Amino acid sequence: MTSRLPAKARTIPAESEQYGLGRSLTATVLRLSRHAGALCFLSASVFIAMTLLEFFYFRQLSGGLPSLDMRYFGFTPDEGMAWLTALGRRGGEIILVWHYLTFDLLFPALLSLTLVSLILATGRRLKNFRVLPPQAQSIFALVLVLPYMIADYAENLAVARLLSDFLSANADSLSFASALIVAKFALLAVPVAVIMIFWLMGQKSQA
Image (cartoon, rainbow, N blue to C red):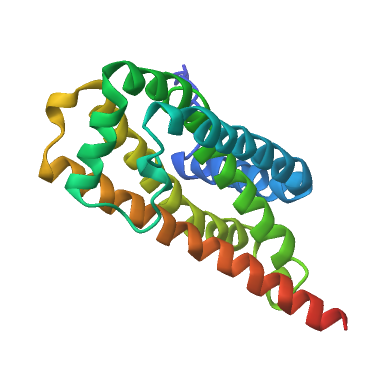
C-alpha cells in the first residue's frame, strides 16, 4: 500500500516579484521620454498660471511684496513676518487655497516628471548614455530629480503651515522655510544643468 503525500505547492521566490516590479517601474520611467514635449507644455502652462496669479493677484494682497517661494535666495525672519502681516488672515487663506492647495500641489510632481523625461530624452542622444542598462538610466534620472521634488513639497508644507497658523510664525520656523526655499532652487539647478549639458553635447556630436 503506497501512501500519497500532498503535492508541494509551487512557490515563487519573493525576489522574482521584486525583480518584476523593478522592471515595470524602469519601463514606466523610460517611457516618460516619449512624452517630453507634452510634459513641457503642461509644466509651462501651470507655471504661467502661477506667475499670473503671483503678479496680478497675490502681490495686490501683500502690498506688492513677493511671495516667499519667489525669493530664490531666501529671506530674513523680519522679511517673512512683514509678508505675513501684509497679507493678514484673509490674504493668507486666499494664497493657501489658490496656490498651495491647488497649483503648487501639482506643480512639483509635474515638473519632476518633465525633468526626468528631458534627462532621458537628451541623454539618449549620447552614445555613452544609450549603452547604459535601462535600469541605470532611470535611476540616474530619478536620483537627480527626486531631491528637488522632496525639497519643494517640504517647503510648501512649511509655508502652508505659516499661512494656516500665524501663531507658528517665529524666527525658527521662518528661517527653516527660507532654508528650504534656497535648497529647492539649488536642487532644481542640478537636473536643469545636466539637461543643458546633455543637449549641448548632443548638438556637438551631430555637428
